[in-house]
Picture 1 (cartoon, rainbow, N blue to C red):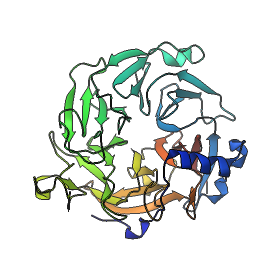
Picture 2 (tube, helix red, strand yellow):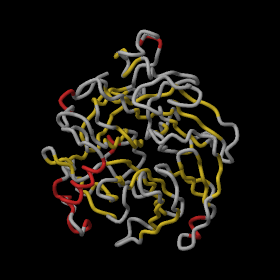
Picture 3 (spheres, rainbow, N blue to C red):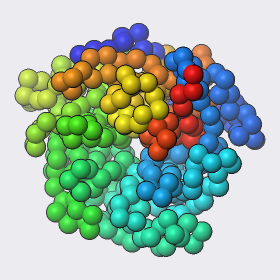
Length: 377
């Protein structure tokens, strides 16, 4: 199923250096004061607020039962914590340093788990030790060390396992499918590591349907096939051992020019929805709160990080995917946009998280910020 063909448009953003320059130019020395939130467009009745602009390269988010928001980063090597993030002027703390692209964070039984490329580490009793955090304990060091797509979003599933994606170590190649381009899971102590699904180029966001408990995930399409091909994907896992096509087939029907002759697209799972080429769909969550209107419940919110090598920029927003009663994706719509002004971005949404009060938190690694979107008609 294809949604919104008009959303594919972005200009080359050559690399993170250029993005940093744009951020510095737009945000200035006082990011807290300069973020132009009045440019963010939302549906009627919604409003956006800045929780903090003191989280450089903010990426994956997780909440503890005590209400602490933990935030991973990609380039900083740090993990941040914000106790009571919805309180006025919440304090930002650093709880881990020296990790390698700790994008992913997950919480279980009083402990914070964080990804560090080849490792998963754990910080015990962290809520009670925010001002004096413990040294991270290595839970598993069995993952590849390549940094190309080596950052990992992580989350605990309904089965109690920690799910860990392993991206392809390249733009396009045919690596060992039992080690790369897959989603894996393991027990909280690092044992029983197993492959859940294969053919996944680079997933940086996933969640489980609140009713069916099926795993849904975003997957970034390959580069260098042009501005409009292939789409990023939203996928659904319905049985063990499914294969979603990489590197042979992209977005369900695009045979790879190098590897497509080896296996046909018909051999693989089609995407649940096509999200548009180069939008860089990252974090996603099902909306399980009650603050938003009833029609939003069980919808999927996706953070589109935005293109880096498209002629006309696309993404840089939060979209909503609506499911029908059979759990099928039937509609996609823009929920929040405005981080891209013309061809210049001042922010890049990276993850979304439903807050305890039902509002939606959005991390932004370009602005180093966390926002709160709430419904207040």
